[in-house]
Image (cartoon, rainbow, N blue to C red):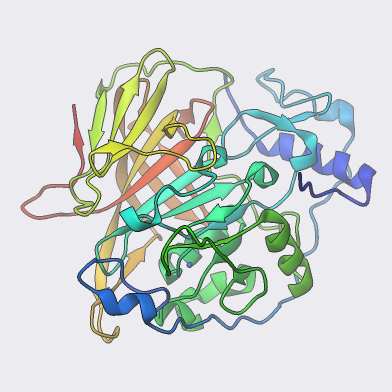
Length: 391
């Protein structure tokens, strides 16, 4: 199986140590519209994003010693022999992944594209609506060599692309919307974007068992090959800072309200929900009136954490035959953190290419170690209704 290997092992080890220090633990008219009624979308020409290869920022200072990196001030072990903490899950992973930039991918989420492949190996999965009011998924993979293939890939949107900068990912997709080609929309984020577009770049394959355009896929090997060819850094750029903090072990929330079931009626096409499984301490994912299955493992998807992020979503005029939308990731907003069958209100704040999450007392929340699903919903929906229900 494909594995990215550092050419400089000492630098690899130092990078692993730096990753450990980054934890402060305690305890992208692309593939078109997915609405079944919009059949012309399947044959619509896909546009591509043109990006310049910019000079990557210098690497982080690696002048540290191993003895200074083993424990943080709280005594939580951050690095142990051959292992480091995954900054996106808080779980132990092989040190070969230390400081590697993750791969994010643009996945379609309609019945014709299911099951998608590899989501069980994603650290974080973002879900949000597109202009067709279907949802698309953006999984983020640190251990991407465990994924057999990225399928079913579709076109990206500019609001997905902006979010990739926060995790410093190499973003994989198949085509792009018109707005995603407008570099002015990225502002200060633009120099840090890294794209692999299968409409323009080599590596696109089609699954003959599915109909186009829901059958695009590629491999991790192809993504890294194209990224290196473009001159992208495979290791984290210097601005990167982890977005989340994790506990050392699972812990139930102190206080909070019931969230044994989380339903998202705002996502009108797939009507997804999560059910908490006390035996596994995870939320099982459902949609389209059925379990959501990973095509690679054949198993139902489950996550330890669910973050609900309320944002300002507005329509943008002039997008083909439908109104494209924009999502404002800047500033701050409200949301909920759900884990262990309970929820607490949280506030998210964006600054310096990173989003942090805080509890009611203004403390950065400590998430349980594990995978996270981020539900992106509008700040207001209908008559004061936020589009997410909790039971």
